[in-house]
Amino acid sequence: MRKTTGLALAFIALAGAVGTTAYAENNASARMREGTMMRLDKAMKDSNGTISFDQFSDAMNARLKKLVADNGGKLTVAQLADALEKARFEEMAKRIVARYDSKGDGTLTTVDITGREKKVFAMLDRNNDGKIERNELPKKGRMGRHHQWDGGDDSME
Image (cartoon, rainbow, N blue to C red; front, side):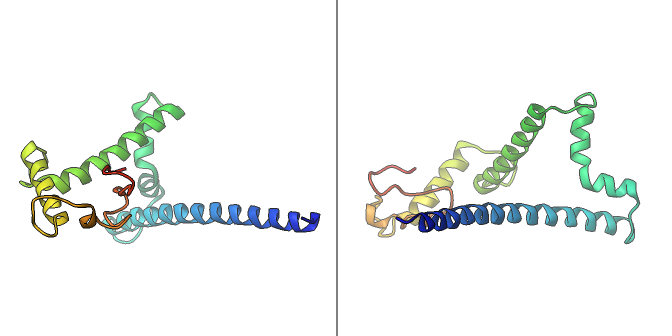
């Protein structure tokens, strides 16, 4: 391969990598801007269309400031990471409870879990023979983001 062709291919690969990273960062930035705008809109609605600096500051970083205050006025990377991880898992837990909680009381029981499993099993058992066969399984990726069928054996990834 000629040197110029190799350099051109390397440049294209680098441009693709940078573009992909920029796209991901733009998506994250867009989500952050949306969240910021939602908090500002709420603050403005709560105070008749205008907000002071103190209201702005509270709307922007209330949770972060609370974390700093709760940790003696300083927040380490580890403390922030723990708080972010806890918040992420709490959101996941809320979604799981909402999905499985048949009584709407905010708790899970084995009855709730078994009931949900029966519903999913019934949906997968398309011929209603009490068994799920490979041809009844959804195509790869059809169960949602978190459930992928391996296709190589009878297990789920």
